[in-house]
Length: 412
Image (tube, rainbow, N blue to C red; front, side, top):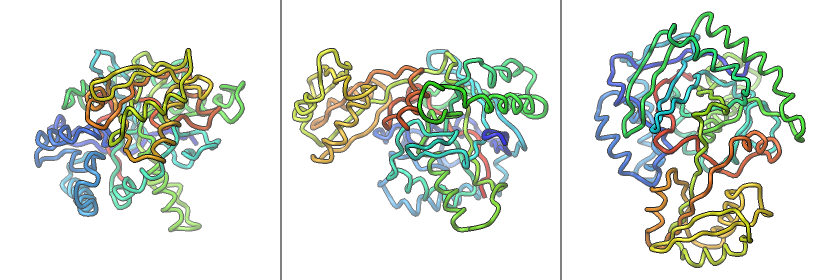
């Protein structure tokens, strides 16, 4: 059985799609004003802002009551037929980014039985970064009783032959256009086409052939090869997996092979597409003596090391992190920050976008680090050889280029 396949996909009907589509909940975590603008723009009408809990708002109110409201809104949307069901379908997606490039993808479901986010896993579908287990429970509380899921997971394939998504793109003009809109908050343009019937069957056959050959990839490396890797939304997919495992524990011995919760809706993208750019995820540390932190970081520096810029109040500079300490600059820095924060007060956050982190670094009692981007060819090799990359190693595009919630799927 293919680990990625078609599904019964929900799309809103008779709604203002620009107000409906909202960016992934884990974006703009240090910018509550962004989410206030979104809520103001969406109003009380149908919108995915009423179906998600932005991480920027965690701890800002009664979370249990908020989750109840989210689940109630989902039930209401289902009862009021806000959604239309497209059975046994994929959706071919083109996202026009801020720079004008177009990022193609194919929406379907991944089999959670084939996915494992634990380090050292040899499953065909794997996390690209270390999963922070503490981040899963808040997401579990949202998903646990939710009747539908809304995906912001971007899944990557290493398809250098351009054999999977590209043939669908070649026939897109023969497919029914489902939506075409500008996304709020300068998110660019997005279009989606319905993929069913012969085009879907042809993709299934190509994916099956691709799956048979993946074990031969990276044969020079120790460890099992990776068929699909999570490019974005790792913790959301880990949450779906943990909820499915909890369901299995509650129903021992039952056949859950056809249960909707066994699968999770994701957008598949090809790592070799030229529109796919890996942007760095920067670090901001607050509530600290920034100059002391920088002084202590000196022990991890060496001549000819990885160049990393920093901002601390009105001061700016560079450090050169010792290459002998890791394969990536982010690995060296993150290992130091984890140790340092375990011994000192302070909080760390992960920021998309150079300008945003530079402004945050100018705060009192803060220091920000601007990291260099990771090369694409390092991704699958890094996951296979190291088990996972350091958390928040890279971002697929900048903050406003993350996936917006558009489609959904019933999970109970």
